[in-house]
Image (tube, rainbow, N blue to C red; front, side, top):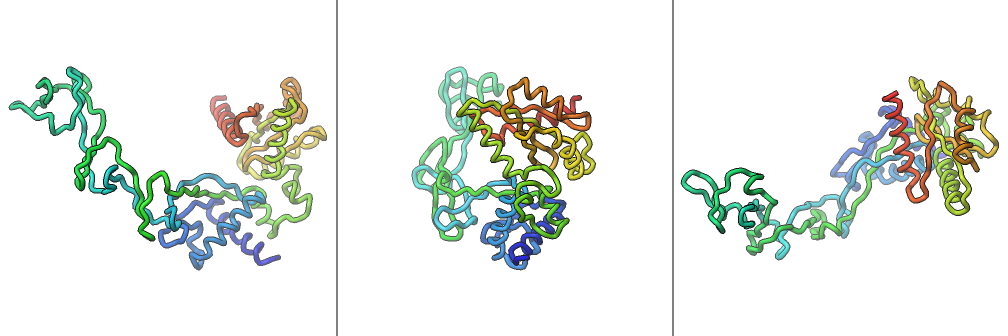
Length: 335
């Protein structure tokens, strides 16, 4: 086994020891601002780790999802930024917010300090001298106005600026670089690789999950995208079923048992693939809605939960599948 594969298997092992999931750990001294494993000997290895994680995701050994956003300096890439509101005139951060009052009776809007108090402590409008008694009835607070204590400018919306603590570059808020930070979860294929002590390199192993007729996630999503494109371009319909085992005590074993029951019933043009740890997808090629209903009756039994998914041409497949997962979960909760 190559050194790269030994290192990547080690990554899978550490993720599995961490309950099967890695979350970013914010680390100011790291070049990236975060790491995934504090046991790594040197923070410099973090770049190699990121590349290995990308490789494992591309080959379906890990599942990647959004965790957070990290802002970086557009000049040097540092994550050490001081983001603050500044004056729109002189860019000074020495500003103060002053609440505004809107008097309904005369329509006057002004800073709160202009609404002086009478001998009984009630505020008076500086324009009509009317008494302000009940917030929401005779006046409201529409927001703040800002004063710059450096140049005396007055404004309603301050600018947002970032000062890089690394290179001293000052950047407008809209210019700040934003990096998506992800979390990782080990997939069923990753668990199989750990069990075997090696990655899957043979042609049939690269297409199907080991010992099953389940097409690997990334390959299946490409097949699904192709079906969507054919439907949109040539009007060739297809059906899509989202399937989950009714019993999820052991998700890995339950998914394989469901796949073993479904696979022999599929037509040669149909495809069975992995969506995630708990769900399978079935693509029914050249199948209209009535055909989907017939296939659903033929393929699904009482040990499975199922939802027919209609893929809209103008929306992303991932978003539509996420909605379908939620619908299946909510249906199970109500049934």
